[in-house]
Amino acid sequence: MDVYEAVSSRRAVRGFTDRHVPRELLERVLCAAAWAPSGSNLQPWRPYVVTGDPLAEIKTRAGGRLAAGEPWDEPEYEQYPPALRSPYHERRSAFGEQRYGALGIPHENVEARQRAASANWDCFGAPAALFCYIDRDLGPAQWSDAGMYLQTVMLLLRAEGLHSCPQMAWAKFHSSVAEVLSPPEELMLLCGMSIGHEDAAVDHARMGRAPLEETVVFVGY
Image (cartoon, rainbow, N blue to C red; front, top):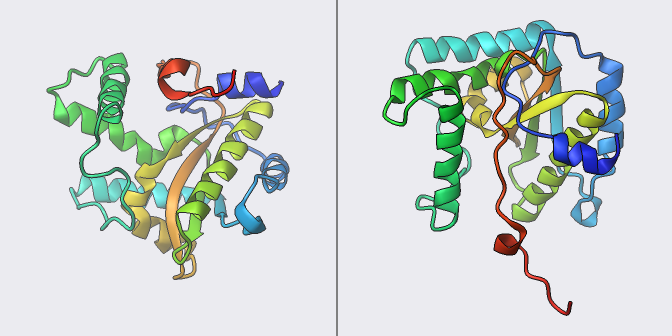
């Protein structure tokens, strides 16, 4: 698979089989992903790769909180600005309509949308997950570096025939993840990532992208 195919076929898959993902495959991916760029080579990413009983325990803890109606954890960072201006507000709304529309869930059915969203905390059935932490003392530039690392991981997973789903949703249950993984106090959970083989029986709506002229400015051409 060449890099263009990896980029074009990567998407947030929300349905996985339970087929085992070998550790040696993930080690190969993460060794290569370590070459992702970072300012002054800080390499600020601190991933925890989890499967088996520990991942099952994380899912159980999150699921138990959902079933009990417990509130989300206090946010440790702001995922979106309080007021998204155009065109970002429209893009976010279009995502919701497309995502839940593909599931046959109307806009007004809030309960059904919440049930669909709860699949995040089961990793959509994936047998492996990556929880990416970052040092609390680092700033926006290092968060950008972590994003480039995570994108590199996802593209390498495609090259191995796997799929993934990056999930900021896990930051809402960061304490449940920490109860199992016991990260150092100086680390903050940036996001999770479900990893595995796609379940072809689950319909995956591919989200569109803005046209080039809406996002890119060419100068001097």
